[in-house]
Length: 393
Image (cartoon, rainbow, N blue to C red; front, top):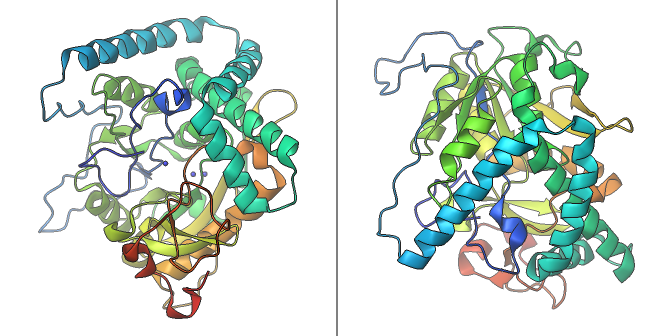
């Protein structure tokens, strides 16, 4: 199985960038993909635990109320977004499944042309990542296809009330569950390494059906009316939704008790929030140490997981063999190893990754001009986490 920010967001989750007319794609951001299998977690609780381990499956936590009064115009915009999302949730499940892809292609085409800022970010990300491999026209085509893939991912999420444990395999095929006993053992904790690649929403949903429902970290939106809707959609497979506060502690406790956890390998965070440096397409970025923390404290195994679109319109989830990490590996080494399992797949299928996300928000102070995307900024807090021998680039 597998990027924007509010002031008090948990460092390992993502929320929604403030919507602008030229940032339409930010209205439906990539979610924080974190879940833990409850059916594989034993029911013991540490004496000092403040969190019960028998959360109710399918429970959806209410979104936290805004801390400040919302101005009138913004409140009106939030309400319009809410009703628009509710309408989409009501209508899209009524559509035939085979309509989703052509609708997504049209919507993605429109977003690509209307969202000038997101398009510029995607095209320059491709330039920085691939150099001269693709010319301007090819970068633009890949960026457009990336928008279309994201639109399809969102449409599939809205259509997901049609899926259940009885019929999901008609739409999502599963491979790799028989390659390692970790998938069927109740006492073998595992960390499923994910990324925002292809239909990552159905990767989480399909895994809830294939491996069992789990614990999911709620997404924080600037519009507080949207959170409960997305929480409900992401709980379709039985996931319980928990607030971001103390989520890491709860995930660690579950992993220690024999549970299965998901962690994103491409989740970049602020360097001052415990990030580790990772080479991503040859460029340094500040990644979440989540996988390393859970691996170290949960004594778990690392299982790379991906989802791919199939020619017939359906999807295929692939669980790889667990990674073999040397004893004593650091959080940085673990994060790099996890990313290294994903990059070759993204290089082969660039149109399926979320290129409109600002993956390289920071760059080394000594990076040559033009090496990093235009939006990258120099920050001492980023330099401070880079290896001493690698601070030149």
